[in-house]
Image (tube, rainbow, N blue to C red; front, side, top):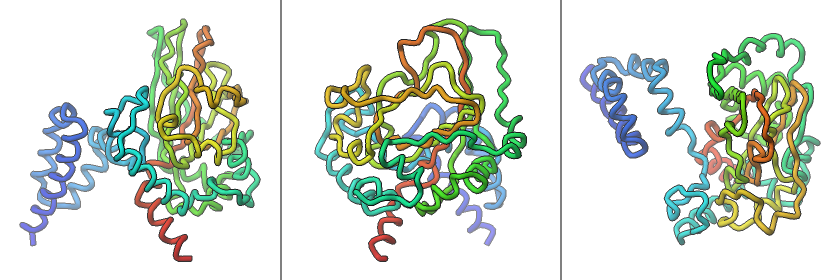
Length: 328
């Protein structure tokens, strides 16, 4: 029994090793000692606990393993999203996942049906919804310290990304208006991954955010942008258009980064996210947006909590939701 447990642990770790090697050989070499430590462990429970608590392993998992939602980085372009080239394999893959998405939990964004929840319907009509006073006073006080950032102030530019406690993501669903919104979608994994992003620049143009127009995916995907302190610098921008129209764009357009909006979208209205403190923007990110404008040239700072469901509700959950809806 003991030998079988050791062999199971070794097979599990080898699986992770093979995956990481193909994704990032340099990191695997760097963290090889940690992986060997897992292999030498005699107890599978201890090995699992080690993987869960080790920050370096979690960083690798966080970057490369958890997000299995269909992506826009196509094989034919080698990950270059300024290249519109598409292979037949890209097109076949996208058509399959579009069919699955149309039948799955987020399929309502493709048709003319109406959602019962007014906020969800607004996302369908415009691509996003703005919810002010998102957290009540009790939750705001509870998580005030979690949203604080230790800025060293010793450089012209500073940016940090901080994973937040899973409890925060759960409370943002269970104890806010998002409970009704996400509940109507019937997503099997309703709690998002939450990341606190802080950016400060003393001079311009030091800001290094994604200032090109782009889509995150080619099928429906939700993202929450929570501004605990509001936003008056380097605001997000996005198109205002029905999600049905956004999802009907050619894949070659959706997969490409643009400095300026492509001709077929140049007449569309845009929204600039100058918002008050304690505001959430819940949006459909399978449509064009950008994290900042290139035109703004002044120092400032911005704090935002990204709420991302793609790391929880992945392609397997999407496929399962499509099968369930077809059987109902």
